[in-house]
Each structure stands twice: as structure tokens, then as C-alpha cells.
Length: 240
Image (cartoon, rainbow, N blue to C red; front, side):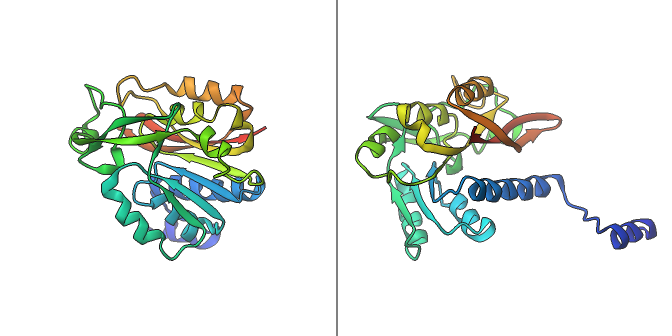
């Protein structure tokens, strides 16, 4: 580090942080702010994969309230159950969420975090061509958020943060909440600026739907990009 850089650091407390690290830090700070401002006491973790999001909530955000995770891929369930074993405020539903009650084949990818009901697009960016490849399919139960509300599995007195990471299926999850969307105070969803899966909704469709349902954008954070092109971002929305 040059003498000038050292002087700037010492006198102005500048911290040199890589862009990706800074984005992650800002996302965590925004989630903490939203949870506090919206008085969130229940997080719906849709597309839990291996529990990465809940680990972030517990270790970095400091959220200790209730979490219900939804993960349909069977090979991940044992790992998740071990992980949540000591956490009394964390439970698992071994199903997917969508716009209707059904059973549906899911594509389990080489890197299982990319698993999706949708088929990878024909022309993928370089970074996705190997890891986002179908390894196998399995048929999984799909339920709606409406059914969870109606059966009382989501308590009526909770302030809800709906986090989704379903690889192109988030819009179906939201449509499955129908008239219960007003019970949700905040939403986190992936917005795609490049078609990574066939027939996935555009970021304009998702944003328009959420604004129509009474939400506004609170933050936008890069998930991945290629050169100068933004591919995906996390959008965090709060109720007006």
C-alpha cells in the first residue's frame, strides 16, 4: 500500500473492500434494517437448499425469530435436518411452493443450488454451462402458501418476511399466496436480467406484480454478472 493510501486509511478510515464483498455486506445490512423496521418475527425461507440463508440470518443479521424453510430436493433433507436440529425456532417443510397444489418433476442440477422446475436456457453465460446442467429429475410435492395460511400452519399474528430463491419459480410462489399477500410485510426475490431458464418471468413482470400488490423496492443487490452485464440481482421489497 502506498504512503498516500496509508495516510487516507489512517485519517479517513477508508476500507478497501472488493465489490462482491461490499455488495454482500450491504445486503446483510438491508435485511437487518427491514427485519427491524417491519418488526419481522417469521421468515419463510422458500428454496432453502442447504440452509445458507438461515445461517446468514443467525450469524450475521442476528435474527433469532421463527423460520420455516421449504426445500423439495430429497437428497438435501438429511443435511438440513442435521443443521436445524439444535434450533428450536427453525422448522422444515419438505415440499416446494407454487401457484397450485400438485406433484411436479424438478431438475436437480450438477450444483444443487441451481435446481429448478424450469429447464436451463439454451444459451447460458459461461459461468453457468457446467454447474447449471441437469443431473437427474425427481417428482416432488408442490403446495401453495394459501394452503399453509388456511390450515393455520402460518400463524395469523406473525409479521412475515417472504424470502425466495427458487431459480426462476419465485413468481409462481407469490401467485400461490393470492389473497394472503397482504399478510406479508417484506419480500426478497431474485430478479433476472438474462434468461437463465426457459420461460422464466422477466424482472419487469415480477416488479410490476409486487408494486401492484402494494410493495415498493427497498434495495437491489447484484447476485451475479458477466463482464459488464448484470445477470441477476436480489430485490428486497417492503409493504408501503
